[in-house]
Image (cartoon, rainbow, N blue to C red):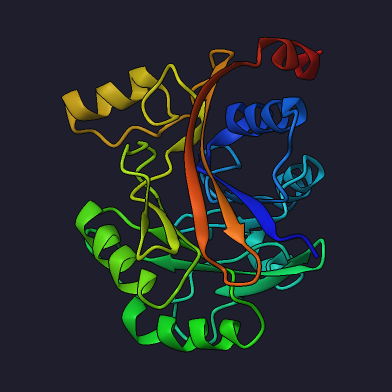
Amino acid sequence: MTEQIKIMFMGDIVGKAGRLALQKYIARLSEKPDFIIANAENASHGFGLTKKNYDELLSYGVDAFTSGNHIWDKREIFEYIEEADKLIRPINYPEGTKGSGYRIFEKQGVKIGVINVLGRTFMSPVESPWSVLNKAINEIKKETSIIIMDIHAEASAEKICMGKYYAKMGLSGIFGTHTHVQTADEQIYEDCCGYITDVGFCGDDSGVIGMDYEVSVNRLITSIPERLDVAYSGNSQINAVVISVDVLTGKTESIKRINEKINISEENMIMKG
């Protein structure tokens, strides 16, 4: 068994621009991480995740998917989520909700626990994360010391509070998602837990958090809820973090923030052709 494992967590994938950017980025890595996690709740035209896009992203080398409040936006999710064994929905939806709030994966003989949770500040009502996470973490610890948590939340303060609190329980990584704006506060809490308030997003960089600029600004100027559309200029960005984790202790020893630009115009032409 290896002594260290490198885990990459990729920010919210937004539409085709995000999927193609992720594909190109992973393919060109000279040294690939051992385990790749990506938030996929916006992967299908900005809202939800279809079975087709789930399978597509798996083929690019993603090992696990977290999600968030938009995971239910494509109705077909209810038909396949129970069989999608790489996909995790937020753990604090009511008991009986389809899907799993955490999973334990195995890669290269190493077990990795992944949890997804929704914040409650400025978000739609869900169960309290505090009341369900302790139990899940303790269950995962029976099998592995490596635990990664995606906090899908709006408020930075809520994510920081949860990061500090659950780092004390020995998690390996706590990464914020949802705002699509990468923060520059990557650090290691409690000498064990890699943390960033928001990883950012993977998608077109010409618009507004992955969505078309003209539609976004019109909604603000007119206050009319015009339908949002995904931006697609051929220029994308990749936001992610990579942590190096001690396999025996589960402690993160380093964290690196990634913010790169990728031109996907050639892929766009191929797909249109």
